[in-house]
Length: 170
Image (cartoon, rainbow, N blue to C red; front, top):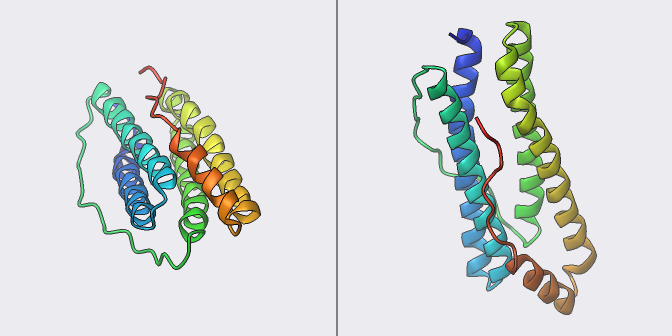
């Protein structure tokens, strides 16, 4: 039986991961409306990753005989004023998610719940990659996004991103 605080934090994270997927679908729709299909694809793939993260948390909870409570997913409350807005929001959101994973890890560590700590190790590594990717995309948009040819090439590159399921085994 997992510590109650850790269990609650894990369940909250399930819902936060689903919100992340919803947020990225919103960004995908925004870019599709702007005619940037590559950016739309990139964020759609990102949404699939976030959904799978939620499912991994759910599976971990179920494997530990914990009930999962799914909450309503809030509408993303973001103001998308320019093409760079979703990229900036993405980076800040990934930093927020990292802080939430760290909080769960800290609670699990305090409870001497080493199994949950080990489970979270993958997410800690994943969040490092997520932040680096979001930062890199923002940097590239700052460098090339104001040039129509550069924006076109970046859009084409992002359109080639394909979904790959996470390799975490529970």
